[in-house]
Length: 313
Image 1 (cartoon, rainbow, N blue to C red):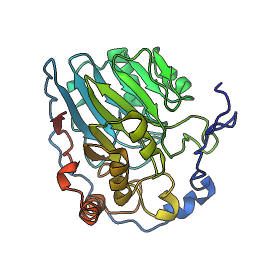
Image 2 (cartoon, one colour):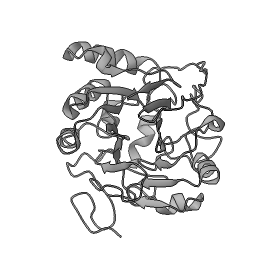
Image 3 (spheres, helix red, strand yellow):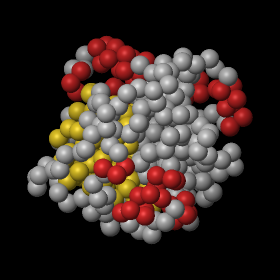
């Protein structure tokens, strides 16, 4: 059991700045908020990720918050989510409208899985079980997720608190703070920690924010762990603000996080795959483009990748 700290009281985790989200009893009010209708399906042509050269680092957007990072030394899969629905059962929860941009069978050998937190759209047990069976891979995750991961067959699990760096991973990985919460049921809220990751991949520094609201941690991460070559930042699932502000960035806040981090380049994630909140499927992208223009940030500094697209770093 971790010792009490500025984000753990001995029983449960919390955000040290007090932005701890809305209580569970307010979820029904969220669920009755009118939603903009999404299309049932958006066509995606899955791609085979390119094989990296000895000095190359490739980043592939698999979809939602799932990214594949390929190097000559190791292949890393972040928040793997291949399920049809983001929910506790195969027939419940928001349905996927974009298939994964890399078929599961086309994944290269995965050396390491990074799991940011236990929400269903980031932590799918069916996907994790397939990865454990196929690759016998190691996992790095914040504290409290070990029992869940062991239940699907992982044996090499390293739990790291915020700012701790892995001693076992094939690449240098540091768990970073995030402003969010955890829960798989109404009864286990914040019994596991949430976070992001700073990955040093052959000299390129890649930051995956996990799920997070906007807070001072972005500036702290930039100061302590920069320079950052590529930041992967959420831009979706941000309405209504009365419910989501503490736990999810909106596009304008994502632009500010990009600036706070001092990232050379950022890529948008967590949009256009599962309708988790009321905004339309294209609204996050429109709002991001408007926010970049408002802040005078060149569009090429904050990219929208196609699902399945790969970029060299």
